[in-house]
Length: 153
Image 1 (cartoon, rainbow, N blue to C red):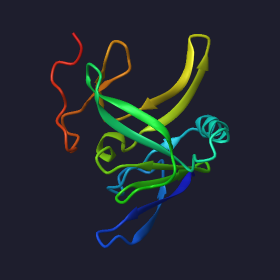
Image 2 (image 1 turned 30 degrees about the vertical axis):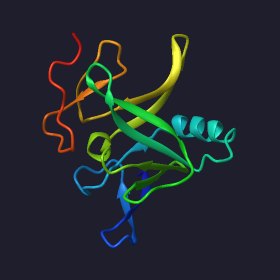
Image 3 (image 1 turned 90 degrees about the vertical axis):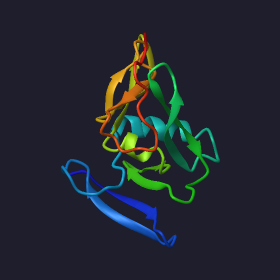
């Protein structure tokens, strides 16, 4: 079983740690994001080149023709309200606005002749753009932003 730890600031700004099983259905209301082992190794290799890369920050931003797009990059640490997940030795932080859109996602790294990069398997996605760089969230996702109707086209 894949086990991990999750920390979050409480209402009183006290850190909490949550044990979880990434393959268990139901459970916590906190984000559960998993990197594959290959993706974690790629993140570690990329982080070696940046001495200030302490955490991997995942976010969802408004943009693209379907309404949302992923943002991924290194940061110096977590901020108030961030959720932190340790997956395969990589500290991943997610801001509270992005949480509902990333919960349950699995991130992999694809390395092939047609290109290389991180890919998201996200259960909160209703549809993706034709260019596959943006997505529309399912209507039942309870996030601060409503899905953009229409998408590409």
